[in-house]
Amino acid sequence: MKGEAAARRASGVWREPGFGALLFVVALVPRLWVALAWSGEAVWDGHYYDFGAKRIAAGLGYSDDRMIAGALVWHPWCHYPVGYSAFLALFYRLLGPSRAVAGVADALTGASIAVVTWALARYALSAARARAAGLLVALHPGMVLYAATVMSEPLAALLTLVAFWLTVRDRDPRRGIAAGGLVLGVAALVRPQALLCAPFLGALGLGLDHRGWRPRAIAAAAACAIALVPVLPWTARNCRVMDGCALVSTNAGWNLAIGAFPRATGRFETLRSSDGCRDVTGQVQQDRCWLRYGVEQIAARPWRWLSLVPAKLGYTFDHESFAVEYLHEARPEAWPDTTRENARGVTTLAHRLLLAAAALGSVAFPSPRDRRGAAMQGALLAAAGFLGVLAFTSASPSLWPLAIFAAVVPWLPLSGRPAVTPALLLAVSLLATTAVAHAVFFGEDRYHVVVTPVLALLAAGALRRSQPAT
Image 1 (spheres, rainbow, N blue to C red):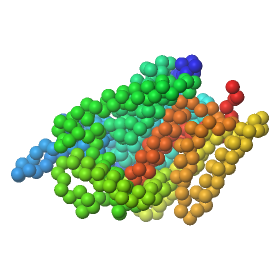
Image 2: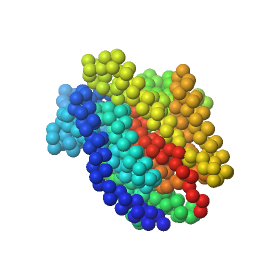
Image 3: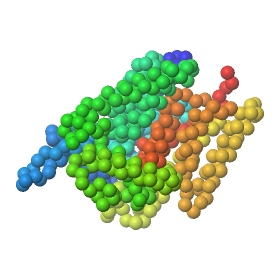
């Protein structure tokens, strides 16, 4: 069943190469223009990604130089995941390290996301709705602006979506899970949280008609193991050259402490040695110290840590201003206050409208032919509407409940719901794991960029017809 459906969907995708090419161009042109015209110095985390890429391109590995006893000494590091810097390094090695080259690389990545979103949506939605999903990503103002930032989120989104697409398109579930798991492992080198999607990839890769929990559990475990294959060589490198072993990077403990220490607010706050980790030397030792410190803070004040979850989710989902602020930091003269305010208003409004529509992605338009289903779907529609009214009419808009709604409803076997496919649930798994990760650690609006394509897919599927009774 799954193989036949996949074959029909795949043949449909490949019968539309013209639309795929057009979608790529539509997405690429504004991204290229923004990246080449508005990009500036790489700032914030982008500075470290750019620096790491230049070091790799120069043949120096993921490292920096330190002055020890009056001499420069090569020093390895892995505080940030290596994947995005390695990706940029390929372009830097071929074309030279420059802002323009980074902009071209990021523009190509952003345009590819639109195409892959469309391709994945073909396995979840009708052809017309799948096209709409791709166009939403292609024209989303926040995603367009992001092409001028040297940041890792678009590449993480692209690789994760490609992993999902490879999983659902293959007639052979085992081959699809294997291919998807390998690409998901590469995505984990860009964003380690991608590994949280591996169990879903395995379990859903078998299709929804597969019965029994045991085969799904085996497939989930296999997907996790396969996803680790691209990661473990990097882990071995860390064990060899660092002061200890680190799976991908050394910022997990750091991030947990930021979300749990006494000065925590729910968003990024700078940690100081006086907060709890004074006597540390190596990166791995420091991260483990912050991890222990974060766990201790949670254990000592669990209710305070839990009370920060709404704030963390709010910082993640309630607005979208990171790209504007990044570009202002890089080129202040190009972004006076009025321009900044207007641009933040546009990107935030686009994000909020998309999130509100995405909340309806697994809600069917009530059908009078099915009274029970119509009642259930009508109740869901009313609940989503209520959350939307609360969000848009409050003095301080809070849209994160809509994100949770969108992440939870597709898994519920409610009567009258629209068709649910492995492709849709895999996309939703990315939204759900992102919400959980930032509820545990801390939130910033740039973290929802990874799930913007998922929101576009769900928004394109809003208020479909109920699934026919079988």
